[in-house]
Structure formats: C-alpha cells, structure tokens
Amino acid sequence: MPERSWSKLWSAAEEARRRAHAPYSRFLVGAAIECDDGSIVSGCNVENASYGLTVCAERNAIGAMVLRGRSPRRVAIVVDHARPVPPCGVCRQVLAEFAAADVPVRSRTLKGDALKTTVGALLPFAFGGEFLDEAEAARRARSKRR
Ligand code: THU
Image (cartoon, rainbow, N blue to C red):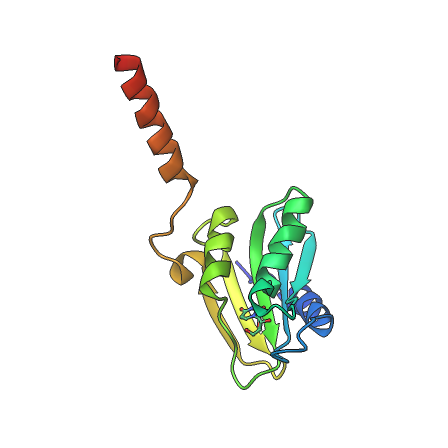
C-alpha cells in the first residue's frame, strides 16, 4: 500500500511553529495531528514568564483535537534545530491517552531530517485508564461481597 503523503501535515506543523510563543527558550515547536476523519489540527508551544506553565506544541494540538471530538491518526512535529526532537515525556503520556500504540509520530527539522516512530515505541508500558477501571471493578466486587 502506498504511503499516505505527510506533506499537508508538515505544512500545518510548520505554520503552527511560526505562531509559537517561545520568548524564553526561543525554541519554536509546531505540531500537527491528522484526525480519524482526515481533518488536521495543530498546536505550537506556549511559554510563560512563570516558566513551569509552558505547554508544549504537541499538547496544544491534542487540545485542538479533543475540541473537535476526534482521535489521532498521525502526528507530525517540526523544529528549526540541527536534529529532530522527540516529544517530551509529558506529551508522550498525553498522546498515549488518545492514540493507539501504532499511531505514527514523525518529527522533522526545517531542513528535512526526520525521525520516524510510533506512540507505543515512545511510551511502552503506558499508564492508562484501564488501570483505573480495573481498580473500580475490584472495589465494586469487594463491596458486593460485604
Ligand atoms: N517543547 C515542545 O513544544 N515540544 C517538544 O517536543 C519539546 C519541547 C517546547 C517546550 C518549551 O517551550 C521549549 O520547547 C523548550 O523546552
């Protein structure tokens, strides 16, 4: 099967990157997600003078996706750096909340060097809602026995 083109996703991520609010790190990041209906949402990193409040591009793109009620099919990340960046640990966890393990994640520099991976490879043994469901089921079973 021929690979679906990533070019629209890259353009959306590049456009988002240009909107980044990163006056403190000057590290501008753009992310774009192709949703399950084929639509594309994007996000940029938004920093704050209170540094810890910074939100990464990937999480802002996820927020835009949630707003549309969609789920992710592919994720693209763009930086202007010597090498592509992988998403940070927090963003991996947030991606894993919504994306199946086989969802492709690609990261690219403006020059074109790319990193190709998947959500599952980025975060093996992810913590997810199923653990909370199991705990709830166990609680219910215990209270029934009482
Ligand atoms: N950043 C992202 O937006 N995504 C990543 O994958 C890595 C880091 C942002 C957060 C912060 O604004 C800047 O890059 C430096 O850490």
